Amino acid sequence: MTTPVDGPALTEEGPAAAGCTRGDVIVYGGTPAGIAAAIQAARLKKKVLLLEPTMHIGGMMASGLNKTDASPRRGVYGGIVMEFLDRARANYGTTDPVRIYFESKWAEKTFAAMLRDDGVKLVRGQLIASVKRSGKTLSVLKTTAGRSFCGSVYIDASYEGDLMKLSGVTTVVGREAKAKYGEDAAGVQKLAYPNIATTAQPDFIIIDPYVIAGRPESGLLPDISPIGQQPIGAADKSLMAFNYRLCVTQVQGNLRPFTQPSDYDPLRYESLARFIAAMHANGQAISPNYFIGNSDTVNGKLDVNSNAFFSTNVWNISYAYATGSEAQRVQLRASVRSYIQGLLWFAVSDPRVPEDVRAYTAQFGYCADEFADNGNFPYQIYVRQSRRLVGQYVLTENDLEKKATFSDGIGLGYYPMDQHGMIRTVLNGAIGEDIRESISVGPYQIPYRAMLPKRNEITNLLVPVALSTSHVAYTSVRVEPTYMVLGQAAGAAAALAPGGNVNNINIVQLRRELIAAGQIIRWR
View 1 (cartoon, rainbow, N blue to C red):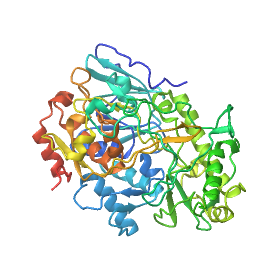
View 2: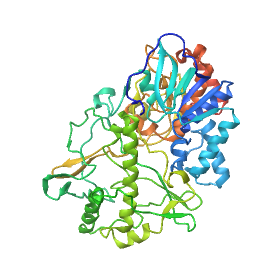
View 3: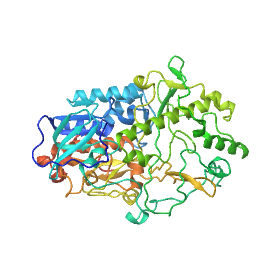
View 4: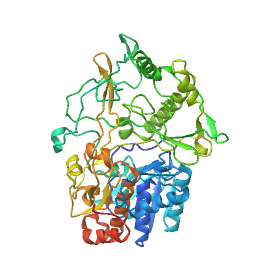
């Protein structure tokens, strides 16, 4: 039995307990951010322990997200993120000016080599159970494996923000109200029917949401919430839909066919079947590559993500995942995995799918040389957002759009404010969705304070992934290269923190150290 990650932090006054494995810097989460943080701190001569809850490192970049947006402009990213991406470019001969491609197995192997090269001690299988504090200082991190780790500075590089939550700092889950930070795109959005228009003229598809069409008393189809339209612009507990980023291929000899999961339930795909039928009735058809896409990477592999309509995304479960215990998360991960495996089986076997789509999809299968100890299915669920820190500075939509500059800027982000679906519910007797259009932004600066809990809460914790931003801003921050930029900055700050107090950093020194390490801290 594991300890719920949303339970209270254990507080104990006095020195750290005996039996701790000690390091100068304790990094929780072997995500790309955690790896960058650990490497940077080690390069500044600190003893670093990197704790990974699972047996695999690399987060999403080693779990199917192999088409990384590196920037169409040179000069946005530098430092450790470009060290990794330049290795990928050299290994695979990538020439795309926007994206750099690699394989998941290569990414995990390369990250491990980078950690070894810089003397980082990696400890796998260390899921957080609890923490101890001495006043405003974290003193011990305990894991469900029965181990304790003690350090001067702790870095929470997990996607879920579990270490910061257990430490007792202020956090938020969901969307802020539009009035909270004066953001135009904040809060609940106006529900809309799926819009399949390819031009500016809307072309909405009406899909019955009930198990028995036209019979509300029969109940709602799976993954549809009864919540309906909430007040527009209001705060809520919604988070973006989650999925897994699949790695598939049509290369014979490395292809494992899509098969029916043991708990396959056709009802989970009834909404999609009705969508296909409605498209047909509208004189349109889904494309042959509807389920697979066309995101080629390297060595005949595709990075399969969600699409705009009914796809690998699973709606209305993300808040439960973000706030749930590990036992609950295990169940949700299994459910999402089963859904996606069933989706691909539906795509190749269900007669309601057009024959040309079934035939095309059946040409593909899971990559037999990826995720070999997990049924060739990715390890890491795509947590697009979870719990967020409410720290010393909250980065907002306005900061990104106005390209605010900060005296404590420690790196750049660069990605649209891209929000996946938030709520799938009922709108006037049909399926309606709360989803907004992507908002383009140029390179923007991120302040050091956005990684810091409030001064009166914790003094030796840095949070580079579950960053202190509004929901709207986080829809841009949430990409792996930006996480790595933030991780590198957190690693440098942890190494420079006098007495472990991250509030007392000399910002000029920190920025100088980051620039020397290749970090880009200002857009030119």
